[in-house]
Length: 202
Length: 387
Image (cartoon, rainbow over all chains, first blue to last red; front, side, top):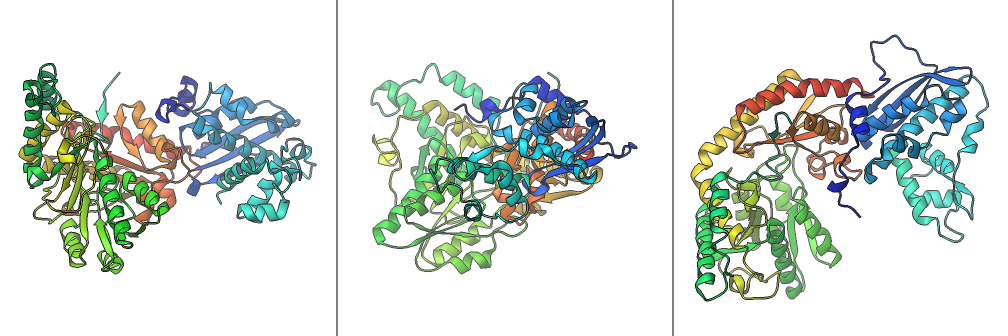
């Protein structure tokens, strides 16, 4: 593995989005969102809030605020650029990889910062669909199965963490039975669990 | 590249020109192994011993009580392994230290605990100073060694080492201090403080990197950490880093000569920056101590509410200002500075902490420049923050 500091190199695109972030939610601007999503917490060191306007099932405009490091700021900024004009379905399926790629890469240990950006966006879309009494067909479609034996998905884990049902990995095991089959998923799920705890400020 | 201002002197310092000059002149000539008997060896050995004398004068101890190591980390590790060895031989005992020591001690503590060694860590108060009552509550006849750092690298808080040393001895324990950050900034005295062990490192006071010094009082328990040749009377094996050691000696001489003047200058810059920040930026918390006598004079640790430290660090870096942060994001972990948390600082504020550490080559103009750049950086980051 490269040394920590050797990875401490941001691409010019990251620097540009950090120094000149796009689509900032300026408090003085007269801008009312149709829906808002927020993830992370100050205690965890990063928090993002995304506001979207929706027109004909497309994200017509977006604003955001981020408390966090340079990667977190640049990731949200890049996400906001990528998502403008996308259909809700496309926007919902934006992945951290797409954001990272558009930024020209992020240091390995900074990857989770880009995870927050797309989560905040999805939270905003969820909020929009819920507010308008619409079905949410996307939620299920982006669920990733992490434990094949017991069919545990990343979204199940996120839900259990966000609602405080799973405060420890043991809680999660009790509730989902993950890892009790072949056991191959244990490390992956433990990582996902920590990530979700972080994202939801637990 | 525009203006570059180095305010990370607690991480390491620029070599003093006097040191650089001396070692570059000596280097091509003195290449013998300082342990060899011939002329080349004796020439090298002379440089090592000159350096030892200079450092002994700075630390107020006998030159024979000093052992050269690869750095303060090795010196600290050596001391902790000695204490662990005493405990093993006695079949019991404890080490008492604090919650704010440098990682080389914190990690030694973790490691030794896995080996069954009992270690207690005394908490610190909000100002980063050890709570003496709580420290004494941990003391007892079974305590083998007490280790409390002199000045903290992050908050700059200075501990009452002399008082703690007396407390340790009252209970029959050995006393160690990691004085790495204090050398050249505070008067450090092995004799007056009645120390058994002290660790420090040359690169924090304008010497070259790669040289540490361990003081072990004559007659105290000792075991080598690095086994091998007979260097340092069998106390630390390995060919002498002659040029590094020589440079450290020159740096020690300079430190002793300049300490009063240097400390006053550092404090003046630190205070100008502290006042300037408080006057120009709202929602700022100054971490560590307020009184001069309890502070490393060149250290200022500040938390900016609602902004994250790594962002501040990088934005200052874009303006040519080098600082450090206790934010988790800068370390690759999810937890912010354990030192600031141990002081009882709010987690959010710990994420927004920035350490400015001044040194010999900083000027008042540097402070002016920081005060010009910093307020807009903070307000910019606050404007895009969720809070």
